[in-house]
Image (cartoon, rainbow, N blue to C red):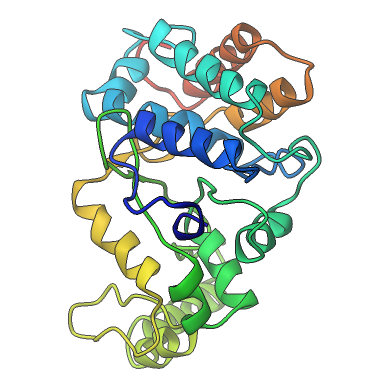
Length: 272
């Protein structure tokens, strides 16, 4: 979509990305695709807008009540996200679109960009092959100041073995993890065509270029709310409510802060 519309360089910072988005919109292209019907990805926009603040200790300040979700730094990010939506830089069905629609939109050329996490690339790989992805799909990290990524732990890049109290089941879980991360790991990454996280195991053939670029960006990436906050409120639900018109940015910020304080207190965080 970039190449077809005369964009020859990837965005150098958030404002540059928006400038390129407006150029695409002027040519009749939908710049961004968002999936407020499934809600959970809405928060990534606010978090990339907070990447520089996160690098400067925002989440530690929120954890220690020196800042809140209602502070200007967070509220302004929420307002900016809404302003971009109101400007018409997103898909017209933003209120109802789902995760599955997002991958199809990029692959089919119905939208140029999406802000997403690793599970999105898993969807793209399920829908297409490496050659097609290398031709159609790229990746760039983004923040207000430059190309700083935000790392976000989620269910697609972590393994969890629950402490159930059942010794037999726990032993079986450990055995599975030991095999998966040990003798079976090379076969696993090869089958998934994904980046190896173990130095002793080489990346398999067929890993899409964009996925390699994702991995390369982690060295300078900063932590998300999920990585660094003492509690994780339902920011995404509140943002989705904002998109459908039932909450204002100020209400999103207050509801998120109120829930954050409740969760932090329940978790025994100091000061709450």
